[in-house]
Structures are given as structure tokens and as C-alpha cells.
Amino acid sequence: AQTVTQSQPEMSVQEAETVTLSCTYDTSESDYYLFWYKQPPSRQMILVIRQEAYKQQNATENRFSVNFQKAAKSFSLKISDSQLGDAAMYFCAYRSGETSGSRLTFGEGTQLTVNP
Amino acid sequence: NAGVTQTPKFQVLKTGQSMTLQCAQDMNHEYMSWYRQDPGMGLRLIHYSVGAGITDQGEVPNGYNVSRSTTEDFPLRLLSAAPSQTSVYFCASSYKGVFYEQYFGPGTRLTVT
Image 1 (cartoon, helix red, strand yellow):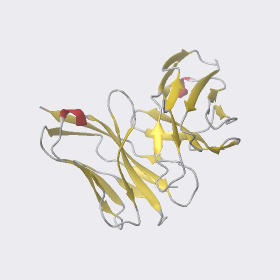
Image 2: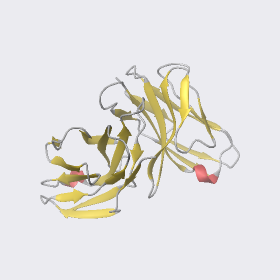
Image 3: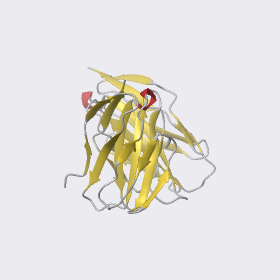
Image 4: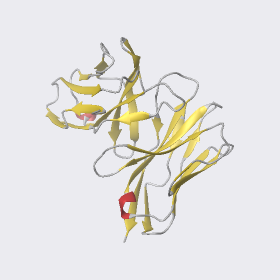
């Protein structure tokens, strides 16, 4: 079974600075997809960014980008120019490409605080 | 579109009681899932469905039942509530595509005393 690990339970960053959240995963599969979700205090799960394992190019979405290291099984999230609205719990998630359906395996989460 | 809706938003049960958490989606998505979120453990998959009439167990299925009689609805039943089932429950739906991107409902906070 696949596992996802987020080793940083809490992180903090100053407004306008850059922060990187770590995620590692364990799998024997070659076809899979990785995601970062944001969960603000409202509890709503919001997709931030996604990456296909067979694409070498790192995904970017505005101020959010990933550093995908397939050999190291690492998928970190970089938030540039941090804003107060970025404060939330962030979850890394894995989806197997070898099974049908939409089952996600989540990491434990990282609580991000943004200081003004 | 309302997206994915869940009712109720909050619920308190006594040990041994049963109840059904409702989930509906109006996006005609084939796939639906139930997750529970506990502190320090992220979200864990309880049950999922790949279409009407087809369900399967996820990582933590014990104590829960599901059925999928229509594409739109995917209720989660707690048969005999236990304090260990105190959690926040999320329903999600997705469509067949490269990413099978999941759309989450707003969650139900359940407390079992």
C-alpha cells in the first residue's frame, strides 16, 4: 500500500516571504498522480496544484509551485509571496494510476501560519 | 450547480445510536468517496463507489455501510455509533479523466458521546 508522509506538523512564514512544505511518499508504482490540497478554517478542501508522475516538468499555479523529485519520491510545495489568506492546513495526496476510481491517500497535514 | 452537498453539518450521537450521513452531487460524476478526518492523521478513505450499484471498501470501513442506488446520492450509514467514530466526515465526487480530480463537500462534524 502507498503511504504519504508530511514531516512538518506546523510551519510559519512572514507575509510576502517564501515557504516550502515537504511531502514524501512510498510506492512501487510508476503511474500515479500527486496533489496538494488546502484546508482553511472553513474546513472546505481546495485543490491547490497537481502533478502527473510521468511529467518531468514541475507544475506551477500562480504563486504555488512544486518540486517533484520522482527518484527521491518527494513532492514539496513552494508558496511564494505568502499572503494572510494562505494560512491553512495543507495536505499532500497520492492517487494510483493503476486502479480505477478516485481513491486518494493523504498525508498527515501541515498547519501553515502566515505572520503579518 | 450546488456541487457536492452534505447533511447535516453537525451531529451529536450517543453510543449505540445509528444514523445516516447524506451526500449528493449534481455534476453527474461517476465516482464518489467517503473520508474521515482525524487530528494528526489526514483524511482516510472509508468507502468509495465507481458507479451506481457498485461500492467497495477503503482503508477504514469497519462500522460503516454505504449504498449507491443513484448516480447523485451516496449515503454513509453508521450502524452502531462508537466514540472512536467521532470525526469530521467528507464526501467527494469525481469524473473520469487524467487526474480524476475530486470535488469535496463541506464536511460533517460528528461527535459520539
